[in-house]
Image (cartoon, rainbow, N blue to C red; front, side, top):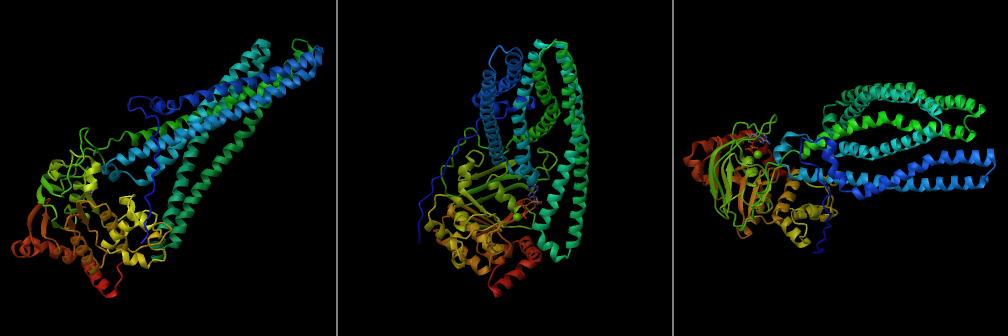
Length: 620
Ligand SMILES: Nc1ncnc2c1ncn2[C@@H]1O[C@H](COP(=O)(O)OP(=O)(O)O)[C@@H](O)[C@H]1O
Ligand SMILES: [Mg+2]
């Protein structure tokens, strides 16, 4: 038996800056604190960018002086101006490099801050929220929306800088020659108008392209995930058709986009040349008339191209702004969702862990999809029950009677609408969620395993557990034998692209994981449904051997499992209608026998499977 030292867990500092909580503010105001958390790097970057852009404006001015002083007048050596041009050009390159680096760094920092904030909030949101939303939507929010906000935050300062550059250049030009400046800027409204028009035509198309890309991705995803279903119904042809249809739609949208670009781009690219042409014709005439110098003409042709940059990108900038705004709204929608279940400010850890459970007049209904406040018909109505420390109780009821709901309420995944749930005499709403969930360990019938090794999956309950503790938990859950048979034993990686376990094996890993946490109350909600009857008996015996220190709540359909309990409670119409040993209830409670008969009806497949498992050995 090997023992590994507990691995140190690296702690990351929480993200700086919160999104402003006031929902009435505009989206930029709400995001401001996230950006301001990095104000020093951000401002430093902006200053560097300002210098870089002013140097850019200085270059044509030096060129002008060089031509006029050194070439035309011959009053200064040409080498001086060449050196100045090289020096300023180099300085500009260095400043640009540094500010771009700083800008992207800050942008990705903000991106990571937002991502962590969002995820942190998602971990706090109640199951009410997860009942309502689709996981795909949450993932897309975390990815594309944060990216579009981040892109805008990077692009906005760059845009600001090109505007500064524009103003500096125009001011400089006006001081030299007003009419020539007016001629140079004359085509700019045309450039702007074209940019806006292109955006107006392209923007709706880009949404269509995105939507169709998502359609294609969804179909491909389903074709791969559902490959077994598709093959078993020989539906490959149908699926290929579906994909071809979606791909045709995507092709149309892409072709339209290219068409538009092909039409506008030559015009947009050649408009600067029109500006240069105008400056050359009018400026050339001015030079001949000796109203401006040759250097001025050179400088102006250089400025004409520079001037168009902000006008060309402004349309794009507005589009990014719109998109970032929509994305920010979707991010806020998640961040503004209040967690319904949270620690009270004065919540204290649960002081004891004896494992006494009491439901006192509990009424509960799930919130319906449409409104978080609307309550569906109550699932539990004035339910009262009491379970003593160390007792093993089976809860029996028809499918949909609310058995799993009892388990969820006990771990406070939802709050009751009426009455109270107490653990060791403490209302679950008065103690910290952390301590409550350390006391209540529940296993469901569809356990989720992470794509890590079996040892790590079991140790998920307690990352500091050493190998011998992990193996002991696995042994109690009767998982040790099949793990030993795997080629890589406890180091076998499961889940996606890993080793595939059978349903019963997964359930045993999940039981081991919960046992490792040593909760005072163990809730097995159909947790052994895919496990061989004999193995299940061994699990229950192993649980009993652990000094009977667990209070165990078993929700099961099998008579064999139910019979193992000290006491059986019958759940009907949202209430515990009878409580006693299996034998007592069989004799005294006609409804009990009726429900059991129903269960056998509902779970005939299950019973057949039990038999098959008994004969065939391996559980599936
Ligand atoms: N997250 C949920 N949102 C809305 N209704 C739910 C949710 N979970 C369960 N229900 C409903 O509550 C009832 C009880 O469910 P559950 O406790 O899972 O039953 P059981 O475990 O006894 O089969 C069922 O009618 C079910 O449809
Ligand atoms: Mg259930």
